[in-house]
Length: 483
Image (tube, rainbow, N blue to C red; front, side, top):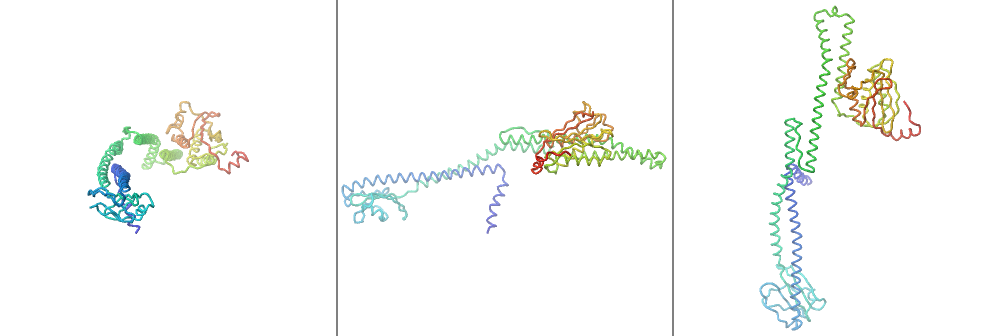
């Protein structure tokens, strides 16, 4: 039983969802007008029926008072009753013995009710009652007169209400038709900006022209929607431009190591084909060449990894969590030492809690240490300091190298940018740009300055977070422990 019953509403819902917005607005407008007309008809019919009833009752009372005055003068048994005119009111006199008198030719009224009989006997002064038991319903007013009572009645006539209802039905149908037409027109006019917006979006999708903005028109929600789409197109334009620049820069950066790698490989292949590899290259030359090839392959691997990291942009599956930045720094130092065993790092870190992505932050710290390691002399360690400063976590990495020229400072964090004196060092020019992006994603700020040792001082400020409750209570009791 529940299956067929539930299928009807589901079909109606599916039908409704398949309709266009214009059709929905038209149906809603027509339905709203139909409901309004129906409610207005019900209210008007009720008011009209009450008004007609009150008018009829007032007329019955007035006629009864005239007849009662005649009956009191002449007596109920002798009062003259005018002949029945053929329509309109009906009269009747109730005698003390319960019998009745009616005019000649008048249709028979319903029998005298018990309550009307008690009025004739003097139990009450008057009585208004309705009788709908016969084909014609009557409204009868009974009034005490002398030693009996008089009654005046009228047939209950519903024809005015019926005519009114028929007229309201016609008006309602016209209103529904007009409402549907108005709703369709309003929908067409109101949705015109949406149509133009759709056409513009389709044009952008077909032409791939993100520079073709959508005209800002309309107001309210429509205007906000157009502005949002234009902002989305602007973001897509910026993203496409960034991708193009990244591809061009990557092609440029890959050209040199690939050319060098190709030339070295071609040299080895040519000598091997001639059978002169051993005679043309000494053992030391072969070792240097193979080391050069290995360095170039390592540089390409690093560049490919960093290009992948940059191309991913803000896309990351890593969740943000509350973490101790000191643990992240220690993990990054451990990775740096495993990658470059000769690097020396001096640590001075304090437990500072932040909200962030652990892997991204560790990559940023590792890039800072790798960058400093390239410049620091062998006998000078890379210094890594972490402390809390107000509402920020401050990470500083400095080296004892030559420092950064003032002309290069504004572009230190740009993609692929390398200072003139860094051209001969390994690297892709992407490490610090990755640091900048990670810091920006975490709401922080990365800056560069000159170290007290003469080298570069790279500083990262991140918003600090409150430690977990148990650690906060322990810190309050014991103080912050330096690592």
